Length: 413
Ligand code: C6P
View 1 (cartoon, helix red, strand yellow):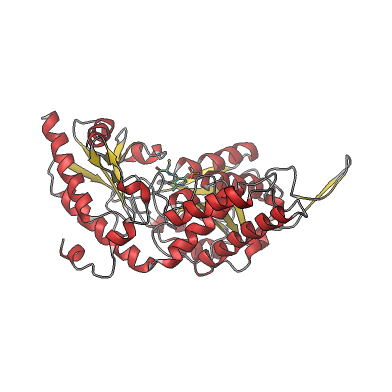
View 2 (view 1 turned 180 degrees about the vertical axis):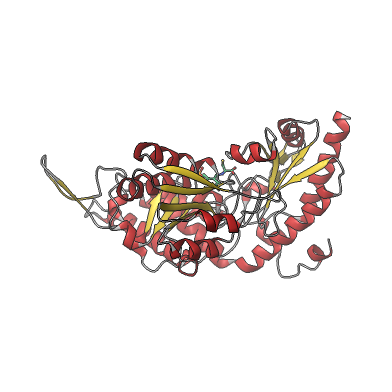
């Protein structure tokens, strides 16, 4: 609690004014939006930039010689440059626009997998992966006769790194691991995991859907081979996302989807493909969403993101303390390193009932398996209630959450 009081360098009330959605009432109560892990809210600057594109610049890109097309192309490619700087990619061409993390992982699994994974090979995924970072690997493993092996975790929801190290061998062809768990909030030591995998020559695909909205990232420092995230979880629009990949892989990988915009030459006999990034961007992309993602990066750059991360961390600690003080509440996911996610259960009350009662008080949380059924199985629960925070949430909102949870318990007593 003390820590939150000391947060002098983060003016949350000023920040909140940037997000129009936050000032509404829901079910007669001021909205308390604690479902940022599903989708974060969008600042006015992103709304304005996207509207401007639709109102004044809308046109197909990379295809026209006319003014609008060139203008839209410039704006879209400027967004790609922003992505490059945001994640510190060495080359803008290594930043492939996708519709979101799901599409990005499918792209890597099927394209890398078709080229580099064979019979008897092994793919490591962790116990805490989102379904998006399990199923594509399962599909390619099935197609190729490869095996999925699971990096285990302990009761706190931390990966057991010793066991991970023992799992790597000459058959391992990929490590697919989440940077931050969406169901537990665990921040995984991906930099160390990548260094270990590289000792075996194994590439690592990092699911960064839940990390990029919460703290600065640097793909060169991590030395990851693939790094994938969604725009709609980092204050941008849905339909935007990024798959960063090292050129050494991308140049060798076959296209994932084919069609317009990704070719060099086409004849009925043979097609040759454009270099990256075009090779992986078939068809007309989500132009407005991509430009909006660029604006979201501008927004993050304009605030003090390090201070935002520190504030959010203190908020999470405060929420953990408040909910932890309620004897009936069991917190799921107690890793030493956590970011912005608080999953919990209450004995005898289904998380959907918790979510519904909280909604009646204007509090938005997520209840369910969070597309992480193996995590639910690990803890032997059907679902959890999950509050997930962003830098515009407040200590007062955490208090409302804790009071509302207390009321839920009273209703069911
Ligand atoms: N998690 C959540 O409420 P998409 O849907 O493609 O933008 O992102 C998929 C995805 C992949 N990895 C992780 C770690 C994620 O958290 C998500 C999305 C949302 O937790 C919706 S299930």
